[in-house]
Amino acid sequence: MTVRVLLADDQTLIRAGFRALIDSAPDLSVVGEAATGREAVVQARATRADVVLMDIRMPDLDGLAATRQITADEDLAGVRVLILTTFEVDEYVFEALRAGASGFLGKGVEPVELLDAIRTVAAGEALLSPKATRGLIARFLAQPDPEPRATPERLRVLTEREREVVALVAAGLSNEQIAQRLVLSPLTAKTHVNRAMAKLDARDRAQLVVIAYQSGLVRADPPTR
Image (cartoon, rainbow, N blue to C red; front, side, top):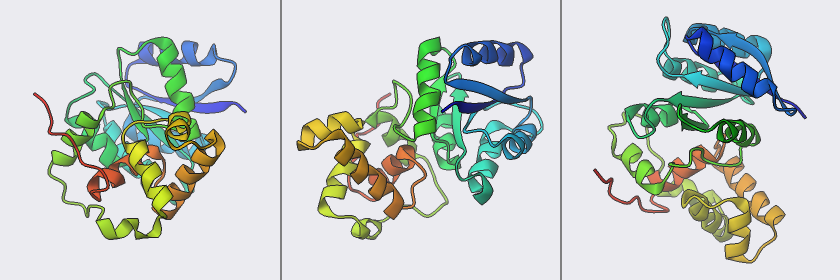
């Protein structure tokens, strides 16, 4: 199945470069482009892309605001947003997670990593970025947040095994690594992850990780400077 990608960046040359790279992959296809955040929202609704590759700094409506509109739209529930940022550990990363982004990458990422990231986000399989570490999540949780945070009571819907699996997801383990750690088949591990996401109403693993930290299921390391 071909993954449909929408490009949102205000620089024409950057969009052209991304289009050439993405269209070179047999399983990926660019279905639309947007030069502003507002155009990105319109195009997401028009193209029904699987993944929106979203720049942050754009005119009219920035990428974070556009992400919020996309992820809040029930008609776009299947659309994932992959944020591109110049600095992977700045305030934009934290805001991207709050906005509902499924992942983020630095613009200095290698081409093959970008293609793999798009596939990963489309599959909902992982919190993205090679630098998406526990320390980064700790920084995210340390930011002021006026919105309600996940509480321990929210985890009551999970079985003990599902809690264990969610904790391992929050530690950055893939389904295969979780399977090895718990002596399960990869398919069983994936099933536990999917059930936990459904019970916690998490769009993807990125949100599952945030819930795990906010609820106290796992503890965040103090952010380093």
